[in-house]
Length: 117
Image (cartoon, rainbow, N blue to C red; front, side, top):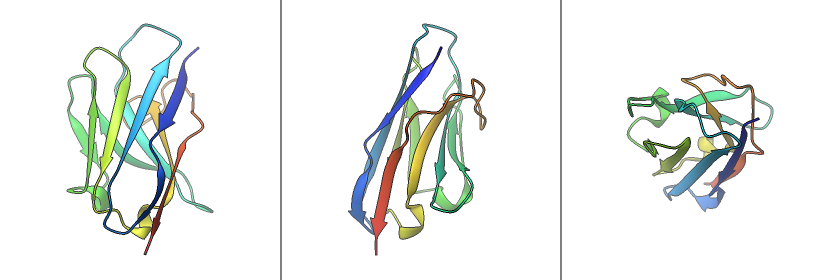
């Protein structure tokens, strides 16, 4: 059974940076693509960024140029560097195993990111 742990969120002012981390544990294999999602209060969960096993990346348009997803090559561990944060980035951020999907159907507790204007 996979378990996901997100960390690194916080309360920052607009224009600041944060780095989120995600670690998957419970199984040694296989290696998955990894995806970050976010869910703002009262809204549906949405895709943010994804990275393949070979480190190909894809972002939602609103974060392109500001967010960078990265991963370890041999582990299901990923990070999300978020620069120039905006109030509309405020949400709980979750990581998942899969390419723009949650292949294992497992969610961690998420990491709250709050950006004040």
